[in-house]
Length: 520
Image (cartoon, rainbow, N blue to C red; front, side, top):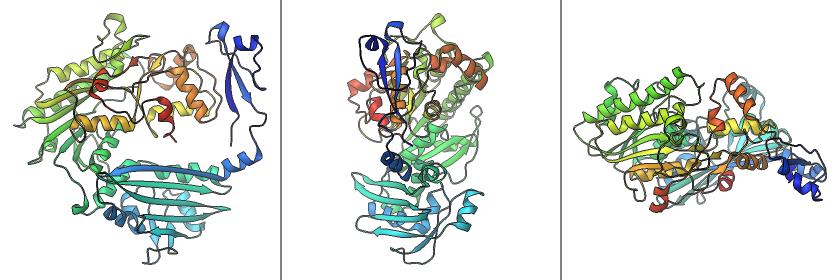
């Protein structure tokens, strides 16, 4: 449904005779009295029957992914729908009723789930292959829906260094709004990991492999699993250190506890390959701000770093690269200071224990450990934005429930980086592509931090939603109820990277507005 368009008028403009659109006006006391924001919901002329019908009756989404493989060999797997269930685990694949694999072949979609999957299989008509073009490397499946259809389309594009897979889901008909959430969007879940499984299905000789072995500690979290998939699809040998086993994971898994030595040390052995390590291990940070939780956050990072350093010291050879994760939260609540890698860390009461305290102990453990690597990097990562990112899910819950206004006074700075840029940066540090910057501390942050109020406004505009702000007192109460730390939302810092600027690193998404165009 098309929501009312929103715009903002300042009280001073109203007093000067500016005509705000007709609708609801709301004064937010978080703004200065002389320039108080007035929210105007423009109802008249915006929700036309045609616009409403279009929005409810049609939806489309596309995701793309790079794979270092020959395009024809990739399409030989993608174009055979009988193989889809082997690599695309967001549903149970297809049942192809004949061996033609051509246009008109009857095909049953096998959605997951005991309830919806069973209902679909018992009631839905068979779908069919509606397009298949070997020259264009394109295959399309169409599933009839009540009054419309769901189309799944895969296309393989030849690009420099390999191929790019494009996966599109298109919905038409009156059930679009429902099927979008229940069927279509879930098909994109863990798309990167699906592509890594696909890469493993391609014949060996058609993959563009490189002699590089990467161990990822903490390789099953949000960033870790996406880094693992990205490195696999760029032709690297990748293994992960993890506390639990996951079926059908595309990289070899070595179980560890992040503290003690054990058989997991074999993860570093790959004969005739330079070996690198990316350490992302550590407890999730958004916990209630207690001494016990701060100790847990610190210990999980310090102990795992020490365990890795001890293991590496006993290898008998030096690592090519060690990328040690850290966070821009190490700079604390920095107010209006402009921060780069050369900025001093806060001390005394400005060094918040759950931010500076945890991160500095983490970095000190790395600095003091017997690290043996030719290239050592401390990667201070800012907030990473991407579809399915825990951060974005939390923000979008606020936006979609009408609570997506400024958090606190909205003036705190938000330093951020897009997932594609973070992955590209790690690839560069590992020597996968481009030239490496000099070893040392690097801020993984886009060149354009935004204030919280501006960020929330852009998110509301993208999804055409009004939004009421959350005063600091309300944030503290809510955080206490949810068991999180209110300072995560109420503090901020303006962090950029002087190192990346001088090195000439090119951001694919340098502004928050450019980032929004790629978010679902």
